[in-house]
Length: 305
Image 1 (cartoon, rainbow, N blue to C red):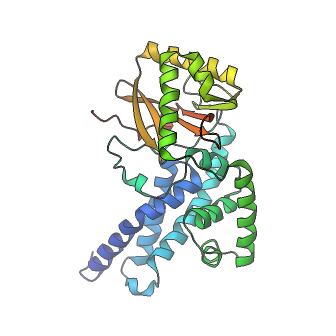
Image 2: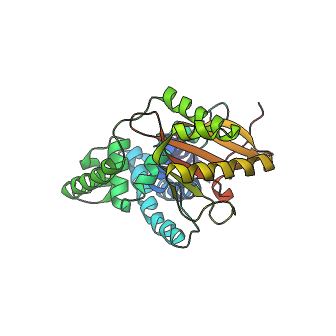
């Protein structure tokens, strides 16, 4: 490296690091996978360094806009590979959860990310619809800015945004429970589950509750399809409790995609992440998302209490 290029390279690294959290949030919300997000950020870094090595950053009017455009387009390209993997995936597919440590200091979680339930809904969108929704609704980009990022006309972006909002609002209530209510509901659910209190469990479950269990074919107990209805869900949860007792699982409450959730550990290894979604009234559990696939829990670590 020459003396002239070293300051440019150092400055390029500083700029990328300064925007990494933004890029992580954008890409993760588009892909729902931590591993794929990290790969896309690596690709973005390589594209960025190829553009800046040996040249001045002065030629880039807005490094932030340049990095966002590169990251979003790499993420759109990565969606095809994710779709192919899902075609052969065993059982329900859930996003890879973002789990904070006990101190809540995971840098990735300082990025803007949406809930697990919202990520599930976003899977129903096309890649472009999802990119537009994330950029506009989550990060506040104007339609004209998005048009430059994805190389479409503003009119096309407005149409994509309209379709995306329609799909999302049809499946997600506008109301979002207060964090304290979510925490209380999560604790009531976990206490009833671990305590074997079927009456209390039935009381907190909505009649049309659904459980999604993502084991990826790596956990024998994971169902091959979602389970609907309070009675069936109660039986499923009871079986999950019995397996947990046999394995001597340890419970920790963590923030998962910004919401309070339960994380179960078998020894020092993560066994399951359990996230609840509530009814619009906030008093019943409408959906339970359980991720047990070890490949989606590799970044979850047990902290000493």
